[in-house]
Amino acid sequence: MKVGVTGGCGFIGSHVVDKLKDARVEVRVLDSAPRPHRDDVECVAVDILDQEALDRATRGLDVIFHLAAYADVNNVVADPTGAVALNVLGTSRVLESARRNELRRVVLASTVWVYGAAREPRVDERSCFDPAATGHVYTTTKIASEMLCHDYKTLFGVPFTILRYGIPYGPRMRPSLVIPIFIRKALGGEPMTVAGDGSQNRKFVYVEDLADAHVLALAPEAEGQTYNIDGAEEVSILRIAETVHRLVGGKGIEFVPARAGDYGGKQVSSAKAAREIGWTPKVDFETGMERTVQWYLEQERTALRTA
Image (cartoon, rainbow, N blue to C red; front, top):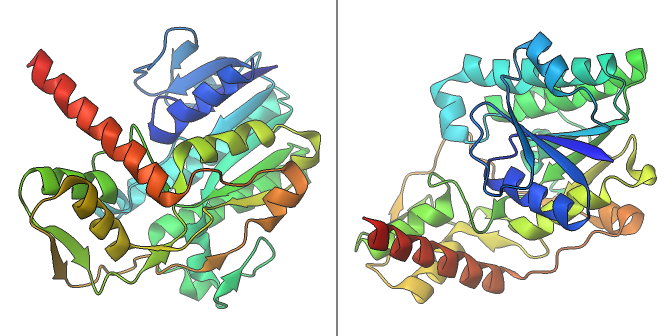
């Protein structure tokens, strides 16, 4: 089997590549500016909005994992039309290449942010969305991308699987994410800023656990299915800050006004993924944070040695 990974040089994508290689799957990374973290995978530079180039880059693949997207909600707010183009049109380009090249599956990276449009507090893959309640352009782009997968299956027979990610954390995190921001501030002697009262909660999922789900999603029974891939325990933003303070030190916590359109968190069930493809998270939050902080500190030491 040969699998392509759009965004395979990114935070999550690079871990997906690792897990696929561990499973002895042949991998082709598709990225706009490949910066491979390992030298035993094929890398192709491609703009996913360029249909003809993407068609060429996906020839010979059996499955494509589509992770490339505007994933930082702050970037989405700064460039909403660009986010819609990359997230929605980009997904349609990937689906179209899959149709033209007769790929066996498209696996879409979605997000639990889509549940911001669900009215009920407890949600699973059957929950309905209210278009008036999406609350964020990022949420809308992911819902639209999921709908395109269903449309391409209905109209053209393109098989799909959708993975709705919980909030990932772990080694190789983007510097703009909350955990590395907190770590940098703690190391720099600045207070960590928490929006609102810090009670917003998510079931943070360790990135290697998240990546494991992609290998399991190759199973035949995952075709045509949507799975929540979320953490096992609810973790508040305040708890993250307190954990970083315990592991790193620093000046403590400062509270600031809440961010408009932020995903407030729902009680997301991942029972379907456990039942159908055997996925459950293995790394608890405290262990994952210890590994993340250790990785970050090692990166800081390496940067000092090479400066």
